[in-house]
Length: 241
Image (cartoon, rainbow, N blue to C red; front, side, top):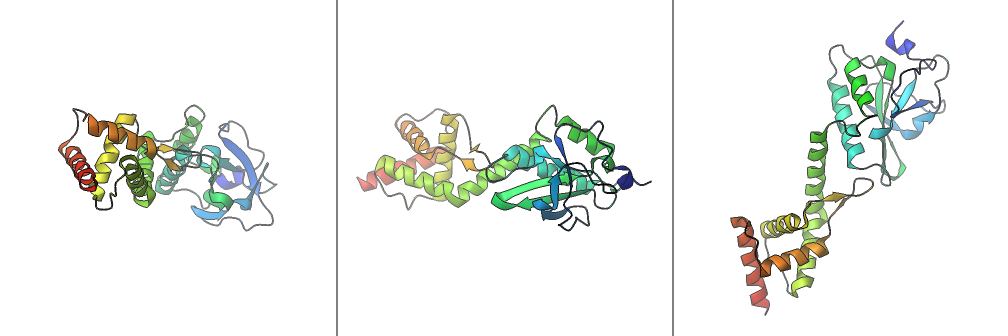
């Protein structure tokens, strides 16, 4: 009997609490290879039907635009990496897949009984601690923060600084704006924050006030780059006035 055949609907003992039993939807095409991305509706909640492997949804690696967050996003990415790198022994055919759905839904499904012990241990540990790998989580949040800065953060900071000082800062360089952002982050005690769904957030209105306060009374810890950014801001204010 293969691992897949043994992982049927009758074998639900000693399953981590973070896993939710699901079964293949008979009206959907089943995944055919490891790592395949399928529609979320490929599975439905419940015990596997006779002859089918027992699949499980990894709840700490599932989310959407309205649920989960950076932890679940990082968990899915890290678990996918671990599953992809399994070589000794290699995984049987089709014992894990990802899924997508409406409103940004993402999920990870596994045939738990067919996974190697090292992967089962990682899944079991999620019952006690929500993150698979804190370093991977930090790296993901850095990436999301960088993407948000490029997409809209820089423009938002420029806009709020213009409102704060009543000047046009279109000529201020991107590098200077980023250094001002770093100063504001330090004064506020945090970098990007992440809301439900993993959306990056930063209070740029408060950031502009912190920059204003620091312009009046520069902190002693400013780097040369940050001091230069404040000098450029002062110059812009002087030109406008």
